[in-house]
Image (cartoon, rainbow, N blue to C red; front, side, top):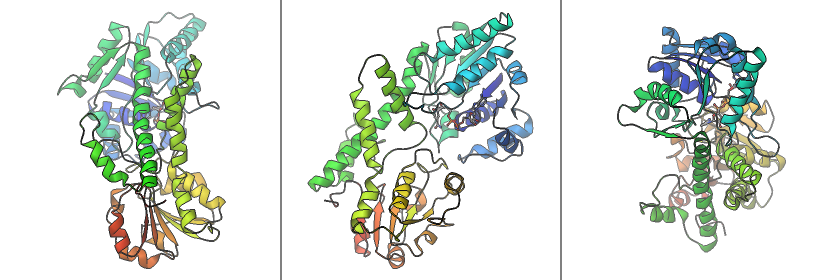
Amino acid sequence: MKVTIFGTGYVGLVTGACLAEMGNHVVCVDIDAGKVERLKKGEIPIFEPGLEPIVKRNYASGQLDFTTHPAPSIEHGQIVFIAVGTPPDEDGSADLKYVLSVARTIGQHLDKYTVVVNKSTVPVGTADRVRAAIAEELEKRGASVEFDVVSNPEFLKEGDAVEDCLRPDRIIIGSSSERAVNVLRKLYAPFNRNHDRTVVMDERSAELTKYAANAMLATKISFMNEIANIAERVGADVELVRQGIGSDPRIGYHFIYPGAGYGGSCFPKDVQALERTARGVGYDARLLGAVEAVNHDQKTKLFELISRHLDGQLKGKTIALWGLAFKPNTDDMREASSRNLMEALWTAGAKVRAFDPEAREETHRIYGDREDLVLCDNAYQALEGADVLAIITEWKAFRSPDFARIRGMLGSPAIFDGRNLYDPVAVEEAGLAYYGIGRGRSL
Ligand code: NAD
């Protein structure tokens, strides 16, 4: 099928590549000319496991193309996806300016029946606004062209995006048009061979499904962080509690890890946006507010522990940081907990020596060259001249370090384990002080 995708970010690029891999002809449009140029040269602007060979292969075979020109791209697609960003605006609501701008562009060039599919995460009612924006542009042109607008939220996880896209848990198709649903069923048929993963519903329910999913996941994290905060005050180890509750199949082991707070481009903004949506219809979503508040405090946790360990004397100290990305297997630094920690350390006069397997370039793009940040080539280089070590991203490479070597390199040997990767006893036996999250140790 002929597919056009607006936005070549994490969602648009992965979706485009996977649809091309299934034999579709895909054109990806972006307003960022630099990004399009890089993609045409075979440079992938993001780190996402497994993405590069799929993009290169399909670009070389002509199944996948990149452009900045919307008009021929809209002409090309029977299906046009909107996969642009929906960042929070000043009051935390989702800012729809990019989505509606694409909708208007589509309306300006539409020339045949087209299924317009919204993949961006958008507030309930956006499908109606996209439909109205397209219709308004058609009317300005005096054109009469049939089209449908479908809500098809995306559930891929950064770090596993290609796998999630090729083998989705579910495909939500939000549409009241049978014609559009049939077009999308055909597009997604290759992803449904094992069993039908499609759930068809109305647009509003589809839009809310995406927010509900992210809000539920964020709630699980904040809940576990709340339990961790209680555990450390009552002298219990939240890691044992986690295993104790996970064995109940109604709870399960997935996604109940306590830590230094959730980040990323989705959970923080989506929880906020859903809360604002609720407020907008006269409902005070107290639980969502609490999820946000717990996460906000959790992001200050490691700084407080480090400050206490160093008796508040952070000025002139050097903190080694393992991990910068908001989670492993990505280079994405949006809302990453590492940023809260580094910025608090800098404000207190400390220096940071950091290592991340993938996010070095992105960190440099955000913070530039500064005297109080050294981006290192490997984990142990980050320890040179450092006083203590903090771990903030649970990359596999950090799971089994040489504790004796770490102790020998640190000025004030202590590990601040923001993801509870280590056994506190093993760390202490190696001669280091251990601080985890909710491990009954930071009373
Ligand atoms: P992103 O910021 O990585 O990419 C967005 C891209 O859209 C950018 O390259 C930007 O240049 C481009 N763009 C903006 N305006 C445009 C226009 N008028 N025409 C063409 N391109 C334009 O964003 P992302 O992380 O891919 O997220 C996109 C949407 O998907 C968001 O709503 C997000 O909430 C949602 N989502 C993201 C994830 C994720 O893990 N990143 C997962 C599920 C859903």
